[in-house]
Length: 154
Image 1 (cartoon, rainbow, N blue to C red):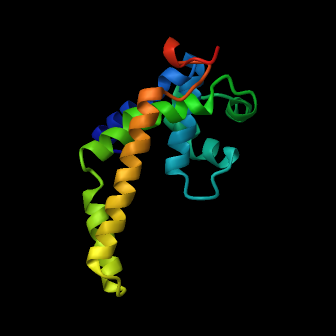
Image 2 (cartoon, helix red, strand yellow):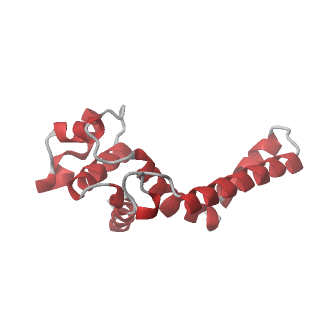
């Protein structure tokens, strides 16, 4: 596997690490890596088989540790969502990284007979709503038990 890809993937996962304890963060990295690499149905067992001891080496955990990640969660989905929104989604939207996808969508829709002006108008509406809600979520913070004091549930 390309070292740049592995480094980038690890850095991306580390952006979400503050939502987890240190051991849970390692488990999260293993699970999402298995999920991305898995070619079969993404069950916990399949994910564990996909990452295997060859990828994990000495840090491999028993398969039950990966199942406990979900049913004995000490992390909160709203906190993970907030970190994903602020650290991954918002920069992509701000930097116009999705522009090639939007251009392809416009091309596909006009090829199906929709007027280009209508398609672009709809996309402008979606972008404006997304920007509005993104700004609102970042400003108000998603309430959770973890994270900065100003967004914690009392």
